[in-house]
Image 1: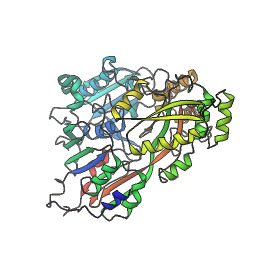
Image 2: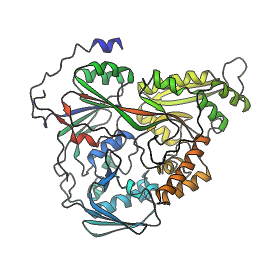
Image 3: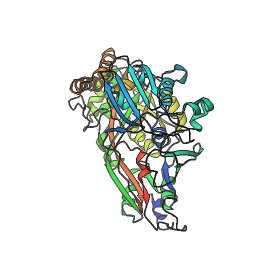
Image 4: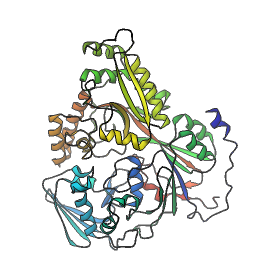
Length: 508
């Protein structure tokens, strides 16, 4: 950290000539490259965040998590399973071609096509058929009631013409209808977005975004200090923030987030398949210490996927406060004694990315597991390799985050036995018939109070079974260069609000 502090006074700000504020690009730093810019295939956070700037959905969620029209001018629900949408007038894709109901139909039918191998297919399997009576109207007929259907229609709409022309390369040549369009993508280096002149709404106030992919925390810090970055969201280690808060060149904004951190386990592993082993691991982790010492207070212990202010949150679930003696007792009862000549009961391999904060968290958990006799080896990988291994089930332990959790139907995607990748995100291969039944019932129940009761039951079972070990809910932290205005925090840490940022006049 001393080296980083030494550079504070070295870099000079304002070395470039004055520009029209809208012409001055916004330079954003992120930790890893998106895996996909095709919304039908994207699942990682940066793919979805950047995709939200390139694509529009039928509807979208505003910062208050309320559904508002995006491409849809209006909609109505007829009966319990028919949804009729009227599109806004004169919609166009970024290549100038018309966006019609046919593109809406194509998007969702291609998600449902097994050849596409979309991880979102399960979210739309209740669609029976899609009618397009005219270019501005689309009607979804569902096989049965499906409560989260409207929320799922935030999925970006692709151009049928462009997809058929580009084929599997569509992710590198995306044609959408969002506020920006892709200008350049150098994998693992940068993504350049420019204003989409055919965007249906008011144009973005900053016409060009340069998104720099910088995996190393210290390099992101240095780039920010020397003026090569203007905006970072949840992309700096907590240790660095006190210095930025005192720096007159920056504004630091903190707000409660919905990002959930967890320890993922492969339940097909013979050791991790044992419930008492998972319970012991949960008791061995001192979340309070990690939040205080590593996260610098930027989070709070999680009892499950849903944040405490979520409408379906269940507070009365099993919890696992730090108790290493109880953890040892559980392992002893399981017959997993300390092996002769060692201080270890068994060994686990923990996979993580090369992100510095992720590695530090892993090192603390490694030490805490050692205290109860679990030897944990940490292996770090480049993001793409790490993420591919997790989806393939090639792991024992890993730690990741779920970003932007809003509808509790996420429990289907994460824990239904049929949701193993690529059809979902049940990466640990969890299998519980009662959970299968409840998550199926939850997505078919339209009454909000009855639905809440279902998801509260689900939370209690998951808290007992521990397919995940809950860690914490992260706070959102945004760093903006002074002179950058118009930022409205999004609980999910999304990027859509970047279109409303603007530079004050006379910025240099």
